[in-house]
Structures are given as C-alpha cells and as structure tokens.
Image 1 (tube, rainbow, N blue to C red):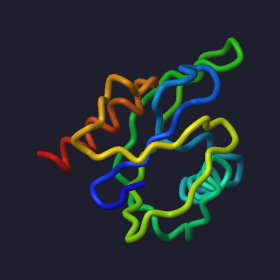
Image 2 (cartoon, rainbow, N blue to C red; image 1 turned 60 degrees about the vertical axis):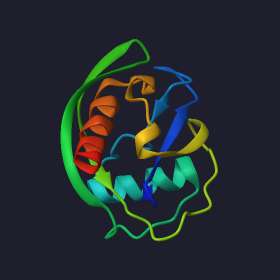
Image 3 (cartoon, one colour; image 1 turned 45 degrees about the horizontal axis):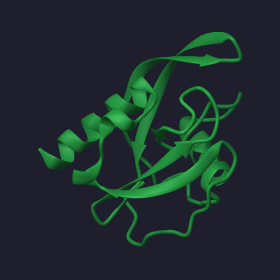
Length: 129
C-alpha cells in the first residue's frame, strides 16, 4: 500500500520473524484468485476494504516459509496499491503494528522474511532509482 511517498509496512505478531517488519498478506485459500486473497488478507490484517480491481501486479518471488515445523516452498506474489488518501487501518490478526514509512527511510534489512525484503528492495529501486 502506497500513499504520498510512504509504504505501509506491518510488524509480525507471530513466528516466523515475530517483531520484524513485513508486508501485509498471506496464503491463498482454495478456489480463490490472487486478487481475492489480497483483498481478504488486507481486510483480515488491517481492517481495510478494497475493490479487487484496484491492485497492480508487480512480480513474484520464490520463498521458503517455515510454519508449524514444516517449511513450505511458496511462490510469493506482490502487488502495489496506490491510494489517493491514507486509509484508517488497525493492526489485526497476525499484525502487531502498522507503520507508514517514507520510501527513503525504509531499512530493508529490518524486514524479517527474505522474499518480502527482496520485494521491498526491488520496489524501492524502481521508485527511488
């Protein structure tokens, strides 16, 4: 989520990488599109309601995600949603906090999961040059 030169990052409430920065998101449920999963996850984690037609697909990255003593190989998909106004959001579900950070102030090393860290770095490289 992008607004006025700021990127919304969350703090992870649970393992893996609890307490580190992350992007909002989660797993796709059966019979769900990527866009539907994105809208659902933003609702669950931030209390945000968006139209499924709003997200702009950026890219995907391979990831290894450890959960409940199993490591899952995933293909993580990343989208950008540029907002004209900053929405009211609240930390819910597996999010402990929400931070709107100016692009230039983001420390990608503070992002706990590898694919999210690389995704934010790629996004910032495109924005900041």
